[in-house]
Length: 383
Image (cartoon, rainbow, N blue to C red; front, side, top):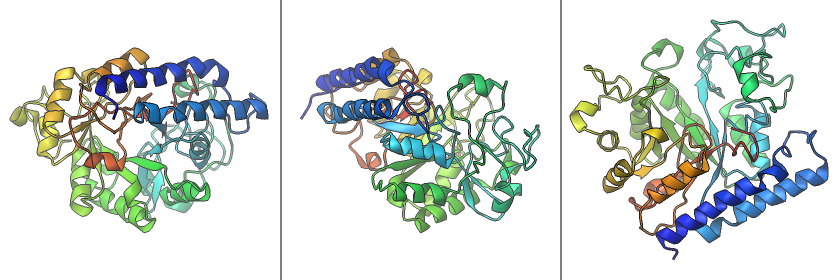
């Protein structure tokens, strides 16, 4: 058994190894390898495999999650992006579902067609306001191309190395599951974020109807044991827990301008948290516990050592998201305390964190867990 101090040291060594190897493999993972020959791609994969092979030394020091597939390398939330992520040996695919007019669960980060990545049947870029996915049938959605980023957009500057493709359609969730099967990957898991919103109720189904449709697809595809469902909308998580208690749920929280589902400064409280209010419970960990949650996934700048200790004392796993800097990773590892734990410490590059399903049953109070949502930018440029 590895002690907590040794575990944290080993985890830091893993991070250092990843960053040190970055210059050798930084651009080796394009869809068609146009930036490197076959030898380079094979060498880069061996480097990644070597780093991952070090995981047992540090009791699974980190886990690699492909955020929206691998959007730094391929069009986000598409089969090409998920294929790239699988080829790199990720541990989990992070994705966002939407539901079409005819009730099909598709994969889309946005409730509305994103004008930065969507071209219409005429090949032209869409202009806002765009249509919501729930107004379109699966056949309708098949006429839109999501394989390129709009030139000149802020998104295009953030991901200059993303492979631009044509004739790429919005996939169904079932197709993503089937892709993993065809790849022969029986281990990869799926972090699925429900994006219902009390502020825009007309853009999606209700949280309850959304959860029901999503769970039906997951169960039909036989993937219930390989998913975790997360959301800022705790009403959706409440519905998931009622319908499928065995499916792990992760309670996302943020108190920022871009997202505030806690609403600490509002007398009326939050519409996001299923009636569980900060004023009544005193802290976000206590809110998650009151909601029946086992996993709390906060925005990492809002986290402190005291909050980690409080959450662990309540029996919660803590999985912060949006961590990019090694020094932040190291600090989060240190906050894990001195307990021994066979569960991984994970390092996020961006996005909404989620623990592996089995972790919900692990002994609480162990080292802080983090999720690597995407690949370190210096390594793979695939946030």
